[in-house]
Length: 300
Image (tube, rainbow, N blue to C red; front, side, top):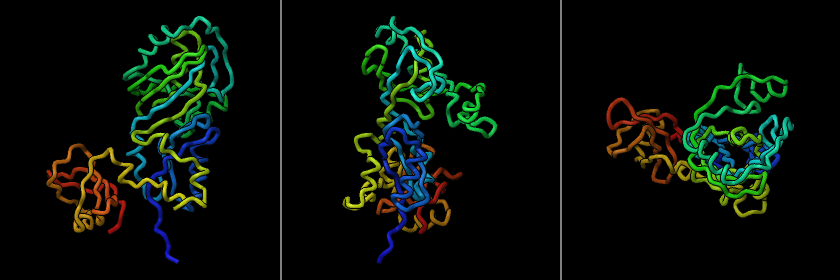
């Protein structure tokens, strides 16, 4: 029996509600019998939608897909505040939100478009003194968090059924939608929390093409889980790329720089062979026109 090569690529998973991102990673490990599995862009258990899972040597490429913009459908519920800033938390305040109108909310949203400063929630995986903030929060501690600069590319109203506001949000990596919901409630002087969240896209990975875990695990499906494995050249299509010769691929495989006469813009480039295998991720070398491997993915 011929042994199949170890998998290398990405799965676009439709994360179910109630699962942590780590739960999804553990399930994928069991499905494909591969220990080297990770994810790009954590989703809270309450949230559903696109979760990129990387397998094999593609775990070394997480940073390049994590940097892609994210798109969400979110529901903000006014009048109720929770300690986690979402529906999974404990209610800590209830306020009157009956006076809110759509025109007012539309005007308030202007404050959140473009580059904004955002304070992360206490219930988050950010660390303070080596401890995740959510552990400190569960222990009853609240610590100061430095505001972070994030960018909201788009913020559109999808619907208003008082006290629930539905939004479409396209944002930079590192944006907390729970923080956005909380902050919107504060400026509206009514309080609010995030009551529903669906991630509909990470860059060119969209929810329409995501696979459910049950389908990924179906042993009777044609080609099994391999039909859902996204090759690196598809996953990294947003990055500049070049096709290298066999000799250049060997040089890269041995950590040597190569000369690329083609004009390549930017500070990063993906080198593929004629079969679309990702050989290495390259960065400019000291000499003009020369590129050195930052990460070698295929031994030649």
